[in-house]
Amino acid sequence: MTANRFRTPLCDLLGIETPIILAGMGVWGMATPPALVAAVSKAGGLGVLGCSGLSPAEIRRRIHAVRDLTDKPFGVDLLLPATLAPAAATRSGVRDDLARNHPEHVRFYESLLERFNLKATPVQDDIVISSELIEAQIAVTLEEQVPVFAAGLGDPARITGRAKAQGMTTLGLVGSPRNAQRQAAAGVDAVVAQGTEAGGHTGRIANFPLIPQVVDAVAPLPVIAAGGISDGRGIAAALALGADGVWLGSLFLTADEGDLPDACKDELIAAKSSDMDVTRAWTGKTLRARRNPVSEAWAASGLDPLPTPHQRVLMEDFLEATKAAGRWDLFMNAAGQGIGMVERRRPAAAIMADLIAGTETALEALDRRTGRER
Ligand SMILES: Cc1cc2nc3c(=O)[nH]c(=O)nc-3n(C[C@H](O)[C@H](O)[C@H](O)COP(=O)(O)O)c2cc1C
Image (cartoon, rainbow, N blue to C red; front, side, top):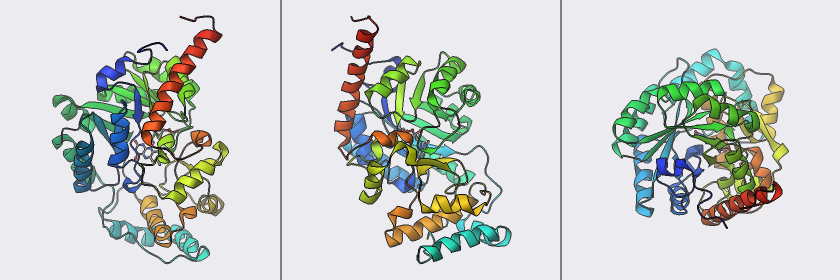
């Protein structure tokens, strides 16, 4: 075993021991709860709380919960959409707009309820993603002096200046070299390059061409690879492509500490890579998730997706009905192609230990196979 072979400069930037990061994942707080975030940070990586859909008060509660479990560094991830369609600032206002201007989409939602025999159970809160909500979410993260901020989707410029001023490290997610340059110009400290293989919102470029191009586009900023990485071989490959670390989502969805319902975890464990399709059904943006009867019905409907927040508001009401009925087979089970390699539920510490050992093994095997044994 080669000591410290698997430490990169990113570890110093983030104050961690091994450059493995738990991706912040939204999903109503179920995917990356404080227990999972703390477990990854305790294991030497960086846990990131996915806070996009959460109220500022809930974000604060979760930050405190992580701090109760560990004094290691951790992060908060928020979605900062660069453009939001002109919309009412409330869920009920968006619903009125849907009824007035998008009756075919409302009919699609009603046809789903009918077909699957679900009772309408509209989401109770009146909050939608708006510039004001995002500002309040950012304010809590800054006030709480969270060590790392990650901007998924969108433009991090609204936070990087304030973050830097208080010593917070910022990461920005991108799916193309052009966006990577934009994020670098906005002042992020490192770029997460996310290939199309990834779960959740995703772009069109696969990691083999994406990572080297992003590395070249933002040098000397460190690049973190995301998408489809499920074991140490994937990590070794990402390092070979020029990445300084990895950002893993799907692999941790089935972790014991995650709060997704067991039915969703089991569905992911049973899924093959080829079951994970990109659809715009759930949020209006391209999102990779387990193909299911709802995404198939959307594809068959021929409807165009609505912009944020309209498609979300429409489909969140449907998802609320699936949750109420326990119909997890109809839920938005977002995950990436790497899920085909996940075979069982495990504690996060065991996943981390395997990733670290697997990377060492893969790097040593590479040296042997290429005659570079040290
Ligand atoms: C269920 C799920 C929810 C996600 N939610 C978010 C999110 O709220 N913010 C974000 O920046 N990225 C989100 N992502 C993307 C991840 O941050 C990450 O880039 C991706 O999971 C990496 O690919 P992998 O799933 O193949 O590991 C989500 C991914 C999944 C699977």
